[in-house]
Length: 335
Image (cartoon, rainbow, N blue to C red; front, side, top):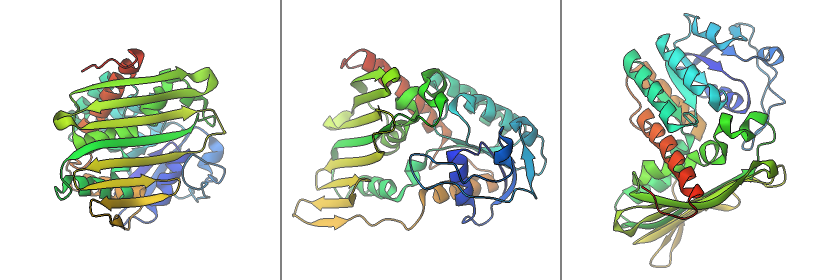
């Protein structure tokens, strides 16, 4: 699959690293508005997870300062958009209309209503559209979902997902909610999507929290209520800029076992009712590599990504909209 990457910031750099280990992937074009980036020096790029960028030789491939010119490159079969969220709708719709398969970084869009245009364009084009909801491919989370859904540990009773970091000072657009959607859509969309992926749609939700972006604060504690008395709590967001470290974690209580993980120091672990404590068996894969390899497989075969369908990514954005509304209602349950 001949791929072009648009946007060579932190996520673009992360995807380029993953490409090197995925059979059947050929990087044929890149696009970024910064000329120095198009020269291949990504070593100064850093985000909240993973190491710095690397240096690349882009001299033998297409290089475009305008992403629309990349779409005109007949050598490009699929486009990987690692662009700011407020570009996603336009990026995706135009690429699908140009006859390209599309992988677009999460979140799918800023607002739920915007995702409908993207789904309609994918249906018209017949091309593969996938949103890079990488948490579905992270070994610690994929193993959790498989264990919970196996039926071997009984019904899930309570689940808590937490994700926190300092407000993203490295990109001004991220702290503008009109461009990023704020912490709920930019950061916690990972856990919102994973909850939908694992447990399905909730019956209703409630939330409390605060948005005070001038101070760098955008935090929420949201409760998702399911049948059979299952409650899923999603908590976290952006804390004070620069000072607060990134972390992600989960705790899931089922009839026969409890599962615990924290990136800050607790490996994925299963605690049994018999008092045993055993590590979860994890697939030996990198989440980003697994995610992109799955997209390439689907696009190469001309099929839709059933493990990570764009309809579910759209549902995640719409649920994020509902959680924002619930936070404004300060704890009131809403459907």
